[in-house]
Image 1 (cartoon, rainbow, N blue to C red):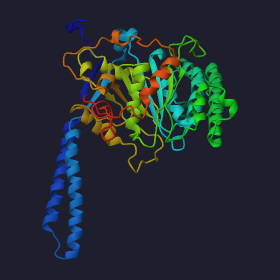
Image 2 (tube, rainbow, N blue to C red; image 1 turned 135 degrees about the vertical axis):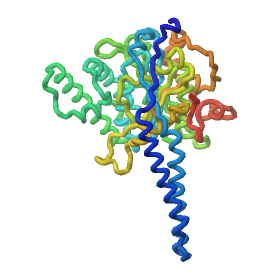
Image 3 (tube, one colour; image 1 turned 120 degrees about the vertical axis):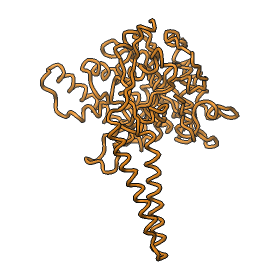
Length: 448
């Protein structure tokens, strides 16, 4: 494509109404100055009142300082708009693979049903399924979580075709069915399939919850998959060997849904834990996931999500790729951060849990000054950025080359050879986690 014919995959627009905002900011600033002047001029003479006055004044000064600093990002927010139709026209045949990391740590605090809902939403992205690789990192090393993921792998054969056929949104089955309790009647075929899929989902939920209450996997269920043998050695949350099982191998021609379409790769990983080794919480899990995925799928783009945050937009991957694959600006972008939204908040949101100011103003404001911060979830990364590759201004990416399948070993071979990469002593006496990837104090913030 010649430079004259270049059409960007995204565009940036500045927020409107900035003059009105500046007028508002000036009035607030004058109010802050007036408040400070009042505190200084009316300083009380009595000692007790004086200390209370000082304490209140310091609190007001701190609030004023915070407000003043935030104006640097609130004054000129920008908003990004993508052109997914252009992405499809140019790159549909060479779309890159995506490695998706879902992190969980405790089956009690993070119920397995909630976790698999998140897994199913990312498996159901509107994206070639053979190019999606979903990894569940279970730091709790729970066989109940493994069982739930095994159930999800079977249900995905029905859920993914249902989502494609009827353009379901959002693609979390729990959220989708709970938001529409009544059977739709305007489309007979849709109503019949809706009822069938909901019934199958409810049955799966009941089976998982029953196992959760039981606290163990019955012998007859353990025969369903060889992975349950890993817990025969007495694995516990804080002391267990690496458990790595490929539940769906997307390269396998038999890994199909009920319509004969390929399924995404689905992998369960519980990295090794020993009491004498520091596991570094989520940062350590991310490190292990990066290493293991580089051996199994090695996709150039990585998405990490927390297990309690489902994706509410099946086009999210394509939106993110509009930034990475733009011919002019893509090589300057290391990550694309999505905001977090919450459903279960009070009617009037008196505690500000919706994070409206942060999501609608401060993150776009930070985007105008080099990019928003990495907030720990909902972020698409370049693998190269996480692995410490130095940025080069003139570097261009050959997406066709990036898309080549490098791994040809069988699933069982990959499982065994990748286990060492999730060992708790892998990072001992190395710079991994300090100069490369994540550390507990700095959770993977690549520059943009």
